[in-house]
Length: 199
Image (cartoon, rainbow, N blue to C red; front, top):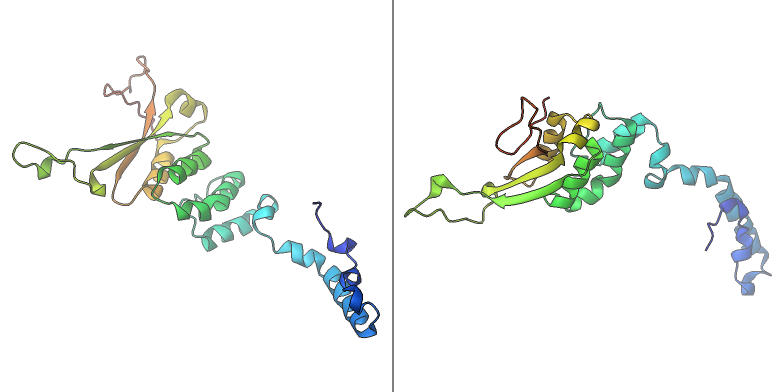
């Protein structure tokens, strides 16, 4: 089915055959058709999502506030802001799960991380020499794994990645950005198998 343009539509042609001979209905249809055609540009201008790519930065900033976009750096490029606004409603529906976290990080820094989750031992809750894994959010740790070389090539700033994680992570969990990749020649290389990018 092709797109229908109001300018090409004769509203009078939509009148049922049983009413085509009634001059009142003919007049009403012609009047309605003329009014719709006169308003065609105004009607198309109210679209938000399909026009997001052409909206100005102040309008996108306003939409970000209106949609309560969780992570929205004002210093980001207009292209990144548009992606964050476009995804915000869908991400809100599943906030606290891996997909919106991964997609928001990718939108913000341009690289898709691998999300790794694991339970932590709760040493302060140990009893009888055992440390049971209790199903509470405060013992869930996750890391957003990003390749060190790719992060350096994309000029990723660690603080920005960690800001996304802090805002988008599940409530009460512990999370961090981990930049992985063996760099033995790097004096800042962490021997704990994690490679930290500087601010």
